[in-house]
Image (cartoon, rainbow, N blue to C red; front, side, top):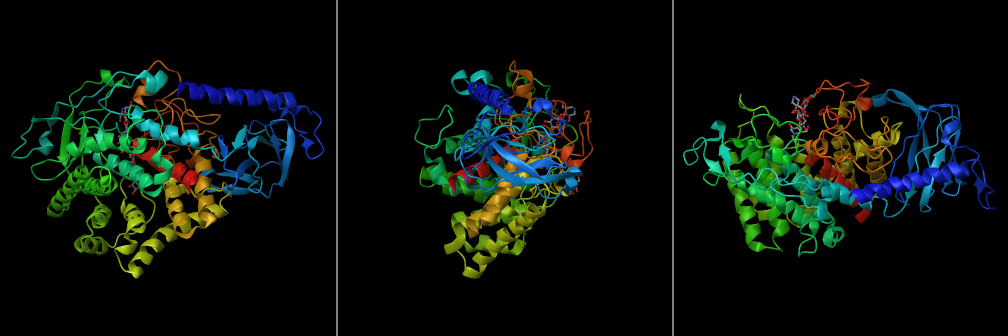
Length: 583
Ligand code: G3I
Ligand code: 9MR
């Protein structure tokens, strides 16, 4: 991956040199004219044109955001310095989350593959970017490989991890049952083994609720785009084996999740954690005792949903594993029915991530839907219907939209046509709202002020995932455009001018709140991680330079509230980047 990043930087450096060399105007040929704009050194403002710093798919919408200058036109310039496209800049509009007025440069009807930049009189030329069918291939693979880099209980060898090779941490073979999690069979202090799994985030703990939505989202990517994943590999230890790499990666976490179910009653521990967050050290140096903490209803239902999903994915591959997953899901469901209101809160001596959620109707609906699909037992469908749960945009604490995604994927022949249509409508109406926000937005992005909280970038990508559902159902390109508007946002078409994925784009974050990236001796962070993104809550107290919602971002290790990375934020990025390439 180090080589990959160096290559990207080299390409950009080479392109910039080309731009400087050509900027003062060589002769164009007869079909194109030479750029009249000069290199960035002579422009009067440092305000940049914001765009997808990686680039665009040839047939897709292509939009860049221009500061509110007097110019009414823009040009697209190729690597030879030739103007290949002229476009108009309509009047500026305000985008509320950024409290700024901008103009839209829309060059969607230009589709010739190549390398380009944009010029507008009075502003600095844009970064170089590509138009190509494979433009998101590398960033997709990096986003899924990030899970490998976050594996607990495993050494990362140089042949797979490059510069980010490291020793194993957290074997988790001696995890103690915390006082909040005792049962007759497992009194306080009982030692259990609970190895593998992915670290949640920048911290080294493992939380079922967040692991669950991440695992589901990756399994959904596999279920929806099997051909895309069949032979796709990204150099993990299991590459070259019988299974697609995606399933090998997911198995690493499923193996851990299984150990979080108490075999005596089917309840699932909420998390595996130290009592306090470790310092900013490498995994092998973070050796404090770990505990499994309190069984809870949200973790248990989340586990049930994921195990039911895994059972159908693995059925054609390993029927006994599939049967074990389904049995685990059903036992978890039974526990949740018997313990319907055990909302988790941190015990007083536990200070790590809470993932607390008192609203459990959506978790019941999701688990019921997945169990219905995997068992086809009518009682689970009745449970799902009884919950009357809405769709919307999913997050770790709001999972009913995932039920609709799965029902639309699988249930056409399992339910009546009216029911099936209503499942589809639930997804499409969520997407319609997002698409109309996209269409009228000055930044061509469906994000609103209210979406800017902790992990706002995951809101963006989960919105995109919902737009993809409507695209899959209706085939209408407008949903794909709106989804891509969010991909562009994450990769640079945003007011901070960061491409929020480490290692990708002209200005990716360098100081993510990720203990391995912070503690290792490599300058660049582990690649492929989506930063949490702007969060005006600013709960970390770091030195933010703006309070504006979409600009409330600090690229510094200290900013765990705006610049941490997590497995649940990368998952919809993986899903959406797969969708736009596979469909
Ligand atoms: O639900 C309320 C909503 O009603 C209210 O309108 C809104 C206004 O701010 O807040 C909402 O609650 C937010 C909650 O997330 C649910 O989205 C809290 O403000 C916000 O502080 C909270 O942030 C969570 C954060 O942990 C702190 O608890 C993030 O969602 C969650 O992703 C993050 O997760 C951490 C883990 O605990 C530990 N590992 C790293 C991970 C990422 O930072
Ligand atoms: O590093 C922690 C991060 O992974 C969590 O998401 C975050 C919120 O729970 O907390 C971070 O830990 C901070 C702690 O809460 C307060 N002291 C500083 C810690 C970061 O160095």
